[in-house]
Length: 302
Image (cartoon, rainbow, N blue to C red):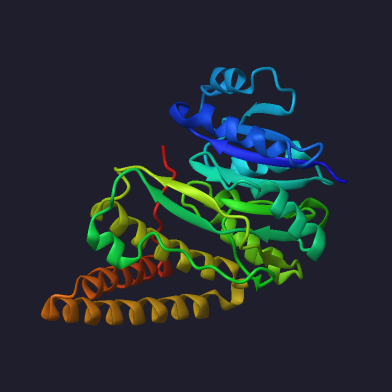
């Protein structure tokens, strides 16, 4: 059995760190030899004491400090610490794994021989969100049948077989904007690495009250569209990037028009669903248009 490293990145979140480390230590018990790596991406090693206390002397818990700003640098540090023969499993520090999450992901990888295995993320709220947010499906993510091959994935519930990943790393140019995981997994898929869905290995995303607001989800919808266009243009070969920009612009205009029409329909019929989903589509289209012309959001700026 190859070494399995659960990798959790953290940035100035001391209040939930002890609970996260505790839950992941329990997951290690189900996979012989598994270890937990916590990568602190603060300028100073601010999480060191909290991790040490939560670990309680457990030698399976490893803490490292990566001061280089940006989530891509923290992800790359995790890959470097785990090593070229490891199985790396990423999870966010504000997520809670299901009971047999780690064992299920590893089992799916063993059965499929995939280069990567991705599981679902289900949102759980501190407080009941605004009905408009629920109607808009802002926190609803796509799910697939186990075994489905996908071409892109986020790192909030992702297993990577480093022997198949090879020298591929997260692009530091996306470190402050987001999207480095999309570039990484699309590149992996395009090079022949299979990414397999495992629906039996969910994690819960804990959504605090300050994110379950209309203002936050509107901004998030625009950022997602912005990142989508940027990735599309970036992955195109240099000679085809003008075409990629045109395609991204066209996709943005389609969403802008469709979202605007649905919003008007919602206002006319007083349908909360049409209003919210129209707004989400419209804002995503606006973000795509900005991304197509080279204007990017810095979601992880400090």
